[in-house]
Image (cartoon, rainbow, N blue to C red; front, side):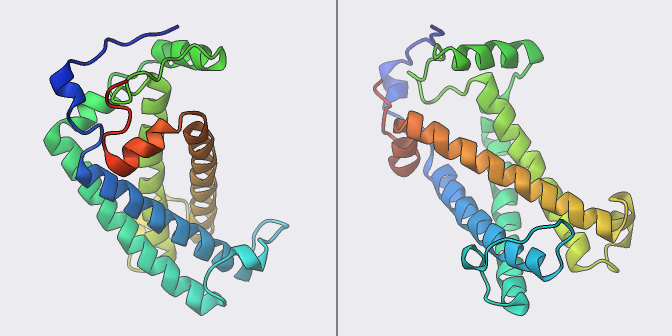
Length: 211
């Protein structure tokens, strides 16, 4: 089983996740939930795949209402995301928590996870699969926001529209990016169910610190 050194007692008394990070996490969760529900309603108004989402799992009631929810949530996600990136960079948390990442390390930790040998004793430590997943989400949200700007103001963001291959391609990029985010959320929920102390740590900041 992979093991990580037990942090010193003084370190274990510190919050696993600082307050700003926990607030940021739950605001992101709210924004993404609103974006998914309203986005499915918007998609149903002009689908480009041979399926639609059930109306009872969408948000907005009608296209106009869904657009209002979607734009409001978009600004919340964008603003909160910028704060998250800025605080992670300034505090050094980005480099400390998410790097290094290497193909060999990802492969090693992925195999250990599949065999049930990946340690979760120290909740402060992200294994390389987690690091890759969180870095992917950051990039995916950036793609969501950029493609969303094209869909919102196609004329004003003409250069960005062309870089993304045009309006219709931007729609598909936006849809795929959101689908990937939904997939990450589903996997994230499963992992939290398997290691519930991670949820407690995100709520209180200290749960599992003495493990």
